[in-house]
Length: 515
Image (cartoon, rainbow, N blue to C red; front, side, top):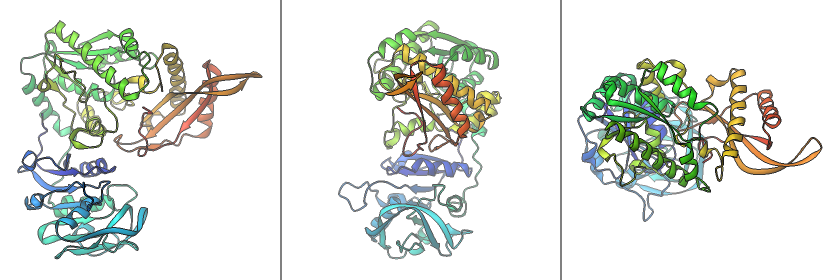
């Protein structure tokens, strides 16, 4: 299923760690874009709506033996091309310039000195950018103009405006590049001529029509986890289909937070009026996970069991379509389209070969949207604000928050810690400002001293992050008195815990979840 897009920019992915940010910045400007593997055949993405192409950064040296490369066909499409970092070096390589290892690499904050050039319209002549490179362009191709430099990089940006080719050595997509968004907007609007009329919420009727067209008079089972993504997907399907065509299945896998099952059933029956079936499969999931410690194995087991439960419910209703709340970051982080696999998401590429649901009968109406776009669609559908802005909760649930093997004892302990933590954040008025907050049972046991006795208890990690898209996050700066109260209550009220730590790792280099 596709969105009704009048114009788009295609981002060709060479494996850089910031590539998803490029897409976010372009979409935030109101221009639709997609990330594709650099080797995706041109005929699969070239169409009348194509306005420009961006070549991303990547970890390789362009002169390396196995470096990913393009032919020059991309530059003959009649649309502007922007190369970022590796993408710039690749342009240089293809058009006869020289790339060499820099005498001094540049990492992080760097001062950029710009010239009068289309990409830098309205940009300060001295501006801070984010660099991350060992190689650099030493000699640009014939006909290219040097548009910017730094103290250690004489060709930090170049262009051949007559052919619509542009390159920058730095990363404008990263917020450390102070005027980077302005540069990307210059490319999208001033150079590519985009109108900037893309809004995710404007796509609702198109997505509704796509669901109707795909399903026809068929029947659908929909995975409803209680999270934002599955809720919006189910609401779309509820608008698109008759009530007798759609059965939303809430699977209690025994890995939910405290009182979560009751809350989900109450909320979604009362607020959305959906036909929801509650399946208690907790014993089944916990038995399958018994003794499993490897995170990816946990995810695979949970993913397959989810499908098996959906199949059983589908047989009861005669459904042969499965609807999932898969979103764009799920696909990207699972390595779809050639990106590096960060972690497997339970509803991405997880269908068993013998599944009742065939590949073309999987409905994923949100699979091209980022989280903030999903929320915009949810608001447009009239879903209550507190449901749309509910914190994300992973499909595998507490399985990826209990490090190591999973037991009922550990789950109950973690649920108690998590409930205290969330309660104190809410009491402090911090819930709305935090993207995601949760407790982790680290699997580490530490020596402690409680009541004059030696203890050997669990260490619990607390995590809270801020973000707008889940692709990058920063640790939330929770006031120390709030953290101190959380620690005091957890250790005082949850037997078996004698140490609590707070995780301040961002993403990158970490991920939101510990597993």
